[in-house]
Each structure stands twice: as structure tokens, then as C-alpha cells.
Amino acid sequence: MKKKISIVVGIIIIAAIIGVVVYVVNMTSDIKDTANAFFDAIKKNDFEKAYEYTSSEFKANTSLKQLETFFRQTSLINYNEAVWSKRTLENNAGELGGVIRAIDGGEIPVTLKFIKEDGKWKILSLRKEGYGFSSAEVVKGMPTNDELFTMASQSIYELGKAINTKNFSDFYSKISLLWQSQTTKEKLYSVFKTFADNKIDLTVVKDLKPTFIEKPRFVDEKSILIRGFYNVNEKRYFFDLLYIYENKNWKLLGAGINVQ
Image (cartoon, rainbow, N blue to C red; front, side, top):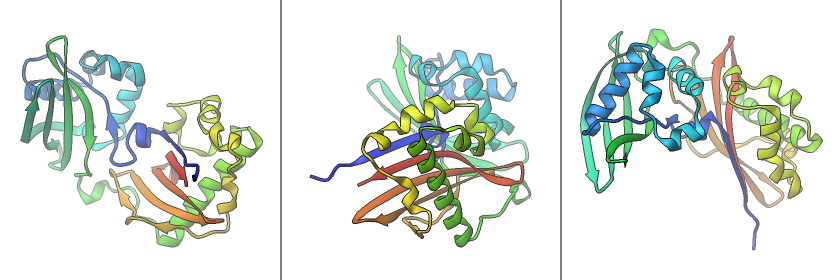
């Protein structure tokens, strides 16, 4: 039986490599009221108030600072109003979909999931489905495929070196400041130690060209997602890599690695 090793880390899939995910929550009787109250607090830059609406699950995984950082890194910080077009309720779960209209007129599609805690609706997750912003906000165009190939190979190679040497100092210094604010060198090593224990060497991808399994895309005006795999010795090294345009360079914001 083939052994499958899979690691996902970073804001990317903690925060969503498949569209940034954040856990939030509220205390009103209807899910629309919950969502509107949460975003009204964000609009007023009252993140402490917004954090009061978060669930116990959210608080266990995300700090107040992390919540604020997420919103300040996306167009959602420019919230003006919400237009909800989809609502479903089933027992103690609910889902709300629509768009957030920014102050500049841009629209950001979002989906929120809810759970009832202590008899009150609380937002379990908020997914930013795409990016709704004016073209003037785009800080950098999509890199070419060759540039994306290089970015992916370099990132995984650097991660592999860190795992092999059990020293994440150099790798940590090269990731985005935003990701650095979410983790430590020690935490990264503990997460990826599984690869060292199973003698999986990620540095073998250095001179290889990956295959993309979907078209690289923006997840917001500053971040892009690359998904693909490498063929290595009859195995496939799948990856999800999230980058943010930071200080005029694309910096790694999160990584998911799956070897099978």
C-alpha cells in the first residue's frame, strides 16, 4: 500500500488556499443580522467588537491580531454594505451567500457558514470566493508561467532544505511578513517534521518543471494561488502554494504539500 503524506500550513488553507477562510461569529437571532453586525464592526475598525462575535472554535485557532491582519490585507476592509442573495438553514447550521460592496464600488463575493452556539447564531467560517476590486487596485499582474514554475520550485526546494537540515531560519526569513506574524520557525519545523521522519526529500524538485492542475489565479488583489504537482521517482508531489505581493516581491504566504 502506498504511503500518503500530506501537510497543509499557512494562512492559505488555515486561511484558505482554496479561497481565504477565516472563522468568525455573532450573537443575534438571524444569520443575516449576525453577518451585518460583524461587518459593521469591521467597518468601524472595531476589531475587538468583531472578535466578541467569534466562536470558541475560532478563538482556539485565530487570535484577534490574526483576524485584524486578514481584513487589513484584503478589500474587505473597505466594507460599505452587504447584499445577501442566498440563505439556507438546516437544524443548527446555516449558510449565507452574497457580495460585500466596497467603498469604491467594488464587489467581493463571500460565503458565510453559521452554527448555533448557546442558542445564538455564530459565523463558523467566512470564505472570500474571489476578488471584487477595481483594476487600479491590482498591485502586480500575474507572473508568466515560467516565473510561476520558478517560484514553485524554489519555494519547495527551500522548504526541503529546511526539513533536511532541521533548521527553518533561512526558510522563515524568506516567507512573507504576514505569514511570519502567524507562525514561528519552531512551529514550522514541528508541522513538516513528518517529511523528515518518512525520509521524503523535497529538494529533488529543484531542477524539475511542475504541472499545473488548474490555472494559477488571484484570490484577492495581492495574493495568487498555484496548484500543481511534480513527478518524482514514480511518486507525485502535489502542492498548493499561496503568494502575496509584499514589498515589490512575491512572498510565500502558505503551503500545502501532498506526496503520494
